[in-house]
Every structure is written in structure tokens, then in C-alpha cells.
Amino acid sequence: DGGITQSPKYLFRKEGQNVTLSCEQNLNHDAMYWYRQDPGQGLRLIYYSQIVNDFQKGDIAEGYSVSREKKESFPLTVTSAQKNPTAFYLCAVPGQHSPLHFGNGTRLTVT
Amino acid sequence: ILNVEQSPQSLHVQEGDSTNFTCSFPSSNFYALHWYRWETAKSPEALFVMTLNGDEKKKGRISATLNTKEGYSYLYIKGSQPEDSATYLCASMDSNYQLIWGAGTKLIIKP
Image 1 (cartoon, chains in turn brown, red):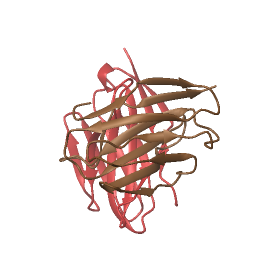
Image 2 (tube, helix red, strand yellow; image 1 turned 45 degrees about the horizontal axis):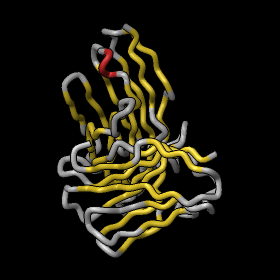
Image 3 (tube, chains in turn red, yellow; image 1 turned 90 degrees about the horizontal axis):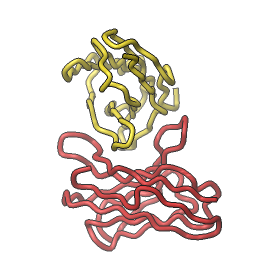
Image 4 (cartoon, chains in turn blue, cyan; image 1 turned 90 degrees about the vertical axis):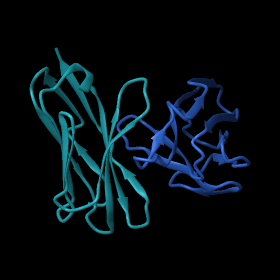
């Protein structure tokens, strides 16, 4: 979507491997968020960052790590410690006229 | 209610018919209620942000109402069209600006 780029769109990994999902934004927002979506459930917050070099755990941070070295980038690493990593991952920033502006998401499949 | 609940989970509607569905949320510490439309292969798109009890918002054929005292919001679609097919998400924001998401209502419009 305009302003937020998530890559790749689809990602396949073997169990036990770490994998990093990319989220880049050119909307000049300080805040960025990572959500996970599973079938039949609402979006769940993994991590969020209010400003560069700072981030906070969300509701389901276990097995994930993030970094925020640049304002434009908020990569999410799904580690081997995440027990059920297969899911759809969404990155978001606050929008000018809406609370959240989302990227197109990354579907991660771990086998 | 401690969580955000949406009903029904899915809905099939004939093209041209009107429809509505529900979002129930915790009424305590309420700050705002968000509605999003999520079309397949796209990112969620914000429809409405509502804060005041009795608030009613409209966007074309789609409208929403809010009852903060009893903790529910209705989304109405008048004269459904195929392009209305999507999952409709609601999220309740509390006074700490934390969002709690419903699992969504999947709407399928039958031509």
C-alpha cells in the first residue's frame, strides 16, 4: 500500500530457522507496529516502536525480536523459539486520517 | 465484555440487498471504535473512527452507529454490491490508546 512496503509477500522456512520480515515506510511516522493475524482471531500486537531506537513488547512478543535503527524501517525477526510461527504478519503506522495505515502483509509458512 | 466480539463470523448477502453486522466491545475505559475493510490480497483500509455515544458516520452506502454505554457498534451496508465483499474488522481503543481487535465479519456478496 502507498507508503508502507512489506516484503516478501510470501515466505517459506524450515522449522528451527530464524526469519526476518521487512517493513519500510516513507510516511515519516515515528510509530510503527507489528501485528499477527490467525484464522478466526483478531489482530494481535507483537511489538511496537514509538520512536527510533526504542520499542516495546506487545501482547504476544515471545519468540519475536525487532530493531528500530532507522525511522523508515522496523524489521521483525521470527525466531526458532516462536512455537507457532505460521501466520499472516501486518506492519502498520498511524495514518493522517485513520488510526492505522497498513502494509500488504507477509504470509509466513514454516514447515 | 472483556474482548471485542464481532457477529456474525460470516455472511452471504444477495447483490442489492442491505445488511448489517455487530461489534461488541468493553464499555469501560472506552476511547474510540474503529472499523476497517479488508479486501482479499489488499491491506486493511480504515472506514470510520467513532468516539462519541450516539455517533453515526456515513461513507457512501456504508454507515456505522456507536453506543458506548452498552458497548456496541453496528455497520450497515445499503444495496450491497460485489465490491463490498471483504472482511470487516472492528477494533476498540481504550483510554491507554491500546487497540483490541475483533476477529472480523466476512461478507460475501452473491451476484
